[in-house]
Amino acid sequence: MKATLALENGIWYDGESAGAAGETSGEVVFNTSMTGYQEILTDPSYSGQIVTMTSAQIGNYGITPEDGESRGIQIAGFIVRDESPIASNWRSESTLRDYLTRNGIVAISDVDTRALTRVLRSSGVMRGVIATGDVDPRELVEKARAVPAMEGSDLVLGVTCDAPFDWMPEPSDEFAPVPERLAGRRLKIAAYDFGMKWNILRRFNAYGCDVRVYPATTPAAELLNSAPDGVFLSNGPGDPAVLSYAIRNARELVAAEVPVFGICLGHQILSLALGGSTYKLKFGHRGANHPVKELETGKVEITSQNHGFAVDAETLPSDVKVTHLNLYDGTVEGLRHETKPVFCVQYHPEAAPGPHDADYLFQQFIDAMETRTP
Image (cartoon, rainbow, N blue to C red; front, side, top):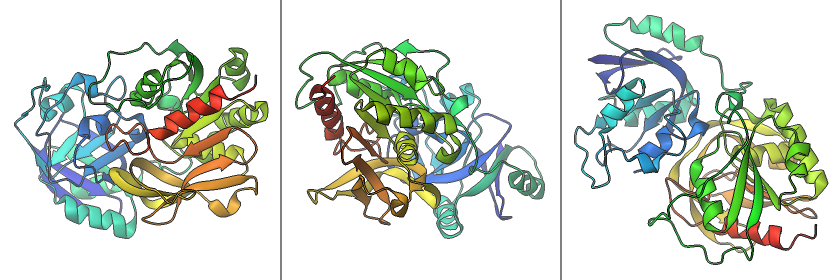
């Protein structure tokens, strides 16, 4: 079946349907990961976005239920150059096309993703529409222009959990790195779910922690009343600046001097709570191969990333230290408070997909919780 992708700037691309029939819209972004498409599809941080994979062939190792990063597919739509009809992997249980169709995800293949990525890098990410069948591309362009902008959008409320729950330990993952040191005792973490990837919870469990997950709007007092050893702020979608409830709760957590660790959107929320500001990047950072420099040691990590907003270093107060920088564009990738047990990173140390260079950050959070004086 024919499919069409139309962008708000008036460009459109003809291709073939690679998923469900229908129409979808969102912010069109690109991801440079060579593998990990299932984890990308199920990452709640992509809510409201149509994801373009820059790797030429997608789907060749199929779909494995154990590799999902949430309860289901989270993206608005999917764009690939070549959708593999063959799933060659001993763990696979279905093809990519079957997975997308079964979950009602509109996707398009046979698109020149190199040309599309160049447009998005030059002009910036933009709103778009994918539709299957015989459609008028000019009408799709007008629909794309009517899609709500990512700036000013609170998408967290659509992906957070409905009620608090305890994360149940999963069977050991034979592909995950072995922690250098387990916690000396079972540590108790209270985690805000802004659209959390499950591999974060898997890594906390691997390090010897029990995690209770809370909806995004839960008052900070409720988390603190549970007497956690530490509080975690998760990744998630949308514009961090509009999340007034999350910023307010983060301020209360910082004031309580409980150890706090944030990843991605959690990093941005903490930065706003500490007095900084955020801004939208031209085309964001999305991929499993982004170099980040740890300033204290000079060590360079290859990291997994997925974000469209960044923290403005010039707005941070004097007691907040920048710890990591992106080597592509010099943007802030990590922060630490000088006097309080609070730190955060913009990238994804839990990987899934991506390298394990930054797994040590979970150990740093363990150390902060174990050295805390209640």
